[in-house]
Image (cartoon, rainbow, N blue to C red; front, top):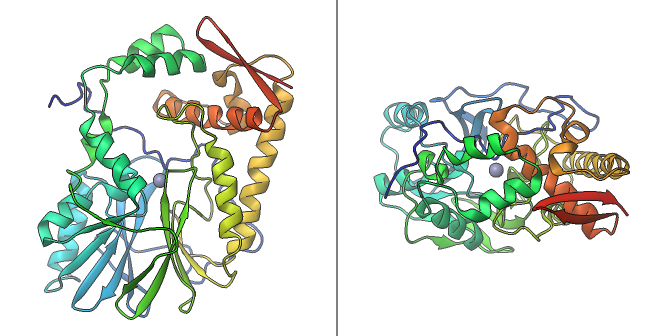
Length: 364
Ligand SMILES: [Zn+2]
């Protein structure tokens, strides 16, 4: 199968564009504001370790969790398949994890910083990958769909969002299927996790709580007795998770699903120590969820005002992100702008008109 012509790494879908690095009311960081280096393990709670894997760009790292699991360790998330992330694992296996075995690899969702090395780890230890079905299928689909050029639907999607021909040509030159360039082969068999399942890992029972909007069927793991929540990207302390209208479902409403998921998580107890994939463990789940809703509602209102004149998705970046959008994150910004515009449309606050293949949105 041909590899994409460009070797450039795709931007992580976890990169945040509406990043507001503030410490806000109601959040505390019981372990402080720093974490382990790559190749190190910091003990977090009884039978739980924390390590980090390098991620290029503003994200800097992803947090990975190591859970005592009887004879070995269950891993939660895996890092990108890039040399420094593999080296971090080798350092762990030669050092703090020497002599330990891995019992299973659990991935919260399909994004490459979470899934990238899962297949490599599963093969190395001869163990199963645990995911929700929606996430596993998405990963399998994306890693097998590698082509020399983007399909016509992708070009139509970029044009509809307002991309100019020069940008479309540049993107077309990068090929199609860059996801596969930072993800090791995804196992063809897996163990399915379902919303509401209880997964016994070592001495703890973890309940699977599924959310949607950032990815199709994102799994959080909640140990209410131990007051812990492995949150993945469903709740992050300082950055707003990317919520994009994806090419695969152009008539979906990911931001609506995201807001519904926040309401669902808001019913969890407020006393959990939240273990996020980016940033530091924190308490204050409810305050953080409330702030996320407020942030999205504020952006939707500002966007609605901005649509007094008809606008394309690319005309909405300044309103939504309050920062310059460079070429590296232009695609992510487009998806996120379309996600917000689509939400306004679903709420009956905007209408969309297609003219020569370009979507124009105006306030209703
Ligand atoms: Zn993600």
